[in-house]
Image (cartoon, rainbow, N blue to C red; front, side, top):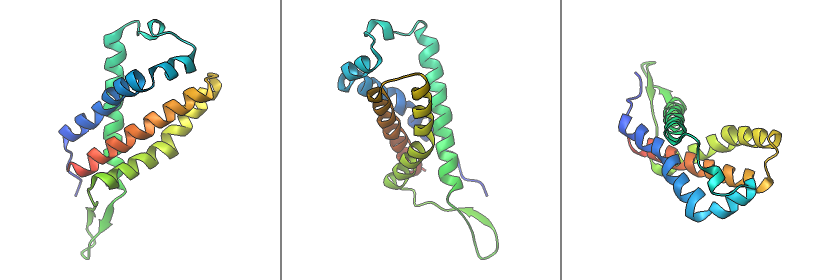
Length: 147
């Protein structure tokens, strides 16, 4: 038995980085983010906006699908007849916890490693790490609760 895929949940969760990013890197922390990069708002406008945002959305959808597969794969069990079945508590909090753990133990080490070699500031690293932990927590929550 394979877990059922709720494509709408995957798409909604895949929109989280775009929506949260518009708020987080916009009104909430725009000035801190720009100063952490030593850039102006004008310098950060993408050269090709449709390609940049389109690829970012595709990457977020891939991450969303991966989170869903990991959530379901972590909750497999075997019944008395020896058959494999998928078992999850399917709550927002449960999914958010797993999403946050995925970000902390998988995504954040990549961000930090890349940032160190790119000589990004500590402030920039912290801003990005917090953003992706929040994104993965929200995505995991949506994906686990919305069966």
